View 1 (tube, rainbow, N blue to C red):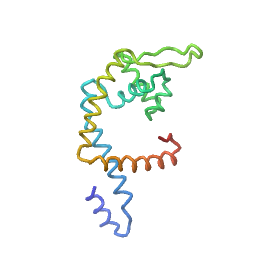
View 2 (spheres, helix red, strand yellow):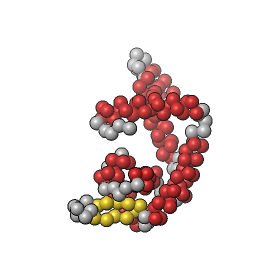
View 3 (cartoon, rainbow, N blue to C red):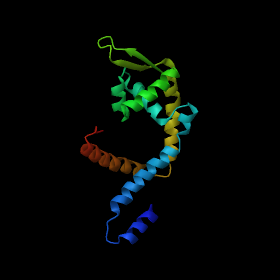
View 4 (cartoon, one colour):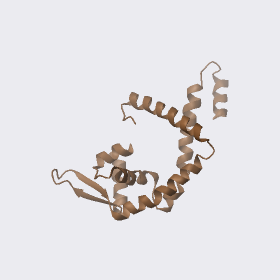
Length: 163
């Protein structure tokens, strides 16, 4: 990232590259984290996005509609549909028709889905702790706060949910 900033400064010496330095680093961190492929999830045959769907069903403890799952996982409806199809084929999620509105599906974890989430979660959290291991706890907490502030501002501007 530093080389990119130096190159831009040489091409446009009067331009403020501070936003690029921050956003570039956030984007690069996100890309590297996605490339890490979450070893524990891979062991369970899941992608991060599929685990997010299973996790949403597990942590809410409720049946959710595909639309609710899309909101819970910050995904598009089409992406959730694709993930749900794969998870159903593996016997991890069940779909039933809402008795009050036959156009609506309700989704819940199967026993196998619950067991898989409960088995993978401790290992996934340990893996993520290892990834963050180079940052002291106080710096992690500060980073969480700073990123939370940035996220809140971005979601406020873009009209998305705040958390």
